[in-house]
Image (cartoon, rainbow, N blue to C red; front, side, top):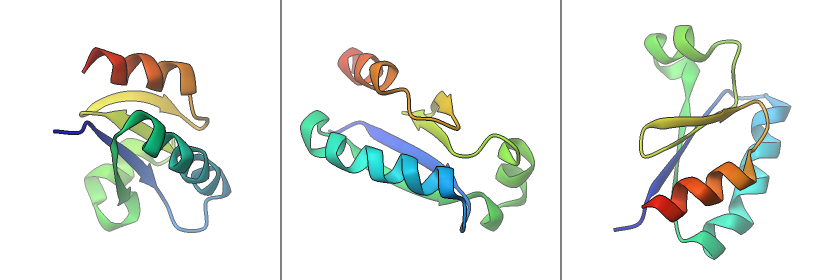
Length: 80
């Protein structure tokens, strides 16, 4: 089973769009699935991540906020 990388985002967020674009080429190379969650669709997520988006989590564990940590992503996926 492939690991799941969750991108918490908001519509119109340019940092979110950048992180999503940066993830796409890595997805094939590192063999993971991307799950995108719009925080505005869930009041709990909105309160939790309001000022932190984009937020990237690997198998439920927060990895980075605002900017993709590619080294951290590679390390987290290597552990799986």
